[in-house]
Length: 451
Image: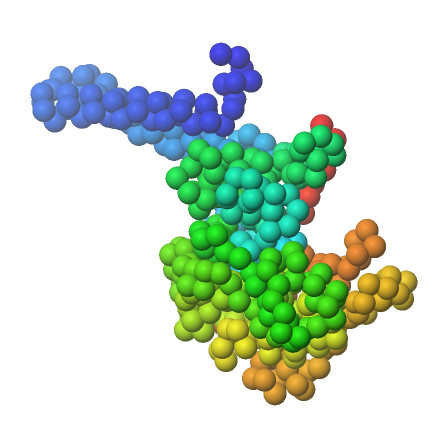
């Protein structure tokens, strides 16, 4: 075995465990000679006592080095194998902080959800993402039709958002084939499809992929049933399929009147219900209101569990209206739809954007019939929902997105202050350490790309 192989964290763990077993044998042998055989010779006594002390020291070294190896294995890029005890102490403290972080359940789908998760993982490791499986378009729809599996796209994005992977691995899993029979198909989707083929069910496949990519928290499909989304429009026509609904709304110039799923009694995952029951906070969105968030509330027992939960319930309002779904909607209109499908106790707070965007970006969006979602605070409060205002908009490649890092900070701050009643000093300390982890992660990813 080469030196390089010897230094691999997984191999090192085994070596130090065997070293620890050697220490146990030393103690066992020394103790046996002293206590059982009752050695009376003074020099022999000294020798066997020395064996016991040596054994204890060997076990101590084994435990310390094994912990270093485990942390190196589970935190690729966070540390280099080093005997710097101060660095180890800081890392262990940070890990303890994340483990003690608030239990947050996020419910939704689409790119908005995964965007938020990228920022949230720096503040807590107790994250459960409950993701819709109604998608029937693009590469996910093709795999759903060809293989009879649940759509992997939204779940793949959430897994990658919470994963501790090298930039090259993330780039590989997001790679989309440009030509051939696999044109427009995503490699990450194919990876999850292959995992589904060697697993008992789709939930098991998701957990195996999460394990391979060292995911922080859990990613769960809301149901394992073949769920289909159906919309009844105001003109009386029905539209089947998540990908078809916005298109038909625009084509027929008729708003969504009612949203339904088939099967109507689709059962949720037990782990999803359990996570909701144990949560400190339940976050709805961000994402498409009708096609990413509401479908989860239509799955049996999900909305009821959220209402009954003692958790603080937060809705992340979209920054821009969405043609075919929320054209002309204000923040209060979003809340009304959530209450329509989720019930009166479905939302306690709404996190809404208060900032503006450049005029050229506004003009670009207006060409597609999209505009900034107006924050009508008085109407929102009249619905029994408190408002958390923040400048959440971030322009990326000409598109308006939520600033994932700042959104996560606002969320955690709100949860701690409103639900967990942490004092400001504790919150500031928590934010500072999380920022330190975030900066180190960015630095390591930059170094990884250079190498």
